[in-house]
Image (cartoon, rainbow, N blue to C red; front, top):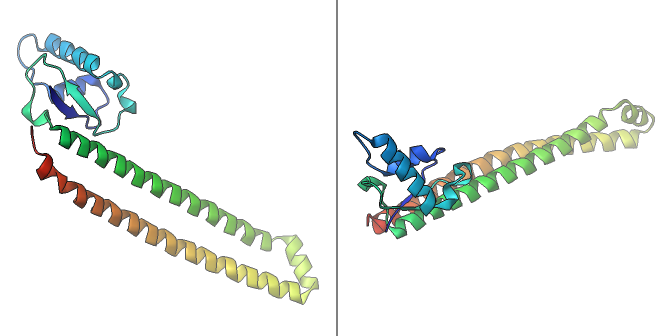
Length: 179
């Protein structure tokens, strides 16, 4: 049994073309047969839009297989692990960006409320309130600056984690090797 992995193909024909060495007369029918055999051996490929790059696949023995498409079980597992870890890193970045956007919106909402006519009128009548509003406005400006710094630091950290993850996973490549 030979194994390979998906590489983000969107059509079974693309995957078939990458995995099998089908050429010459009758290649269209042979490719169709090979694609059908791939689907039969790998039912999870029915909807490739739901298949992550690096997903292991079984290569059925229906046509000549391109040797560079074949991977060892260890390599298959490593590729899947890499895909999942990169996905988790991407999800963490999205969640962090979403949280930052919500906090920025909250701070901007407070700042806008402090600029409202109602607040201005109340502050005009009470100097203590006016001072408190000024302090709150200053705190909101400082918070926005903090959020910008946090966003920059987070982006740098995520980029660094991605590079370190790639470096770590590249260490498995020589061990996994070819079958």
